[in-house]
Amino acid sequence: MVASAPQHTVHGLESSQAELKRQIIAIAHELHERGWVANHDGNVTVRLSADRLLCTPTALSKRVLHEADLIVVDGQNQVVQGGRKPFSELALHRAVYAARGDVRAVVHSHAPKATALAVAGIAIEPRMLAEAVVSLGAQVPLLPYAFPNGADQVAQVKAAAVDFDVVTLGNHGVLAWGDDVEQAFLRAELVEHLAGIQLLALQLGRVNTVPDADLERLLAARAKAGLGPIGRAKRS
Image (cartoon, rainbow, N blue to C red; front, side, top):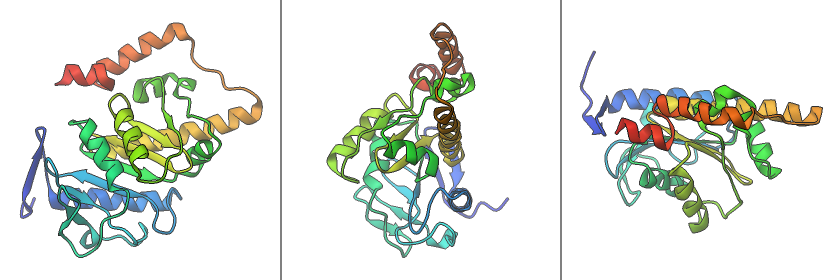
C-alpha cells in the first residue's frame, strides 16, 4: 500500500486523505445511482482534524464527481486545498461536528421516500422494526422546516445531533452522520428503506410498532453495540 498522502488522526482513527477521497467518491456516486440526489443536490464531508473538512464541492453533479474535484476547507470554510467552491450547507455539517466529537462523516441527500414523508410532515418510525431500533434508536426526529442553512436550522441540527444519528429535515431531505462515510451512508440508507415500508403500511391503513415492553430491551442492545448516547459513553 502506498502511503504518500498525509495522515490525519481524529479520535484515534487514522486514514490517508487519498483513501478518504476514494470513500467519498464511492458514496457520492452511490447517492446518484440510487436516485437520492439530482442536479447538484446532496453533499458529503469527512472531518480531517478539529476544524478541517474534506468536502464535495458545490455546483457539480455527484454523477461526474472525481477525487480531484474534492476540496478541503478550514474552520472559516475557506478552501485550503482544491480548486472548487464549498457548498452552501456546510453550517449544517459543522453543527453536527460541533455537537459530537465522535462523528467523522456527514452525508446529506434528498432520498425520495424519506423526503416525501418529511414534506408531508410525517416522521420516520424506526419502531416498525426491532432491528431499526437497535441501529437508529426509538426515534428519527423530523426537524420542522427552517430556512435552509439559516440560524434556526443550524440550531435544530446541533441540538438533535447530541442524541441522534440521523434526522429528516422538513421540506429538505435526510442528514446522517457516523464514525465514517460508510456508517453515515448506511444510516441514511436505513432511513430510506424504513420510509418505503412506512409509506406502504400507510397505504394499507396502519403502522404498527414493536410493543413498548420490548423497547427497553432493544435500546439496551443498542447501547451494548456501542450505539446511542449510552453506548457512546461506554466506548469513551
